[in-house]
Image (tube, rainbow, N blue to C red; front, side, top):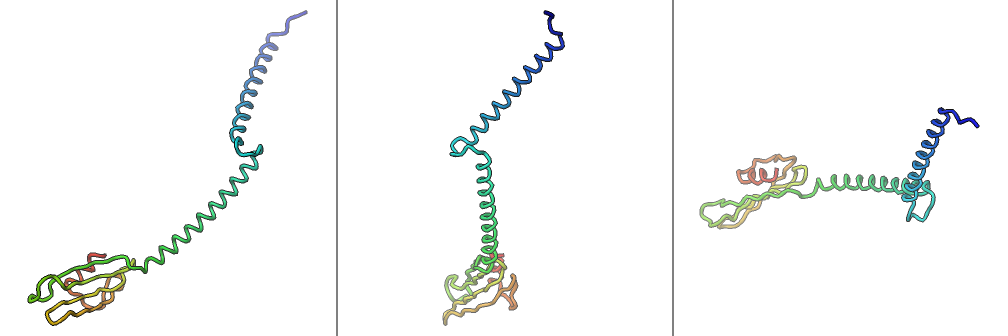
Length: 152
């Protein structure tokens, strides 16, 4: 019997190597698939991926809801008291200690009030001036300006 041609032997060798390579590749894919579905109680990767997509959509919805709530909170706290500045001073030379004060109370928009308390021998006087966006419609004393500068 005649020996097969050389090209046929080469072709057979190439095909055998190709089949071995394909077999190794399929084995790697099968073992990777087994690791993915291991412990899930399911043998179907499609079911697992669908569950993950549903969870991902739920998480996206939750995140969107949380972002909206944070935005609403940020808007609400702009009107809350956020900044406080105090300057103590001696308003009259004949009284001891720094018992007079200027107190600035502002929100996130730099709006609020300045309370001025002037303590003297005859009594204490208290004045309140409104502040809108960092400015007062009334003239401010040096101490009131210092208290306002502390909070800006």
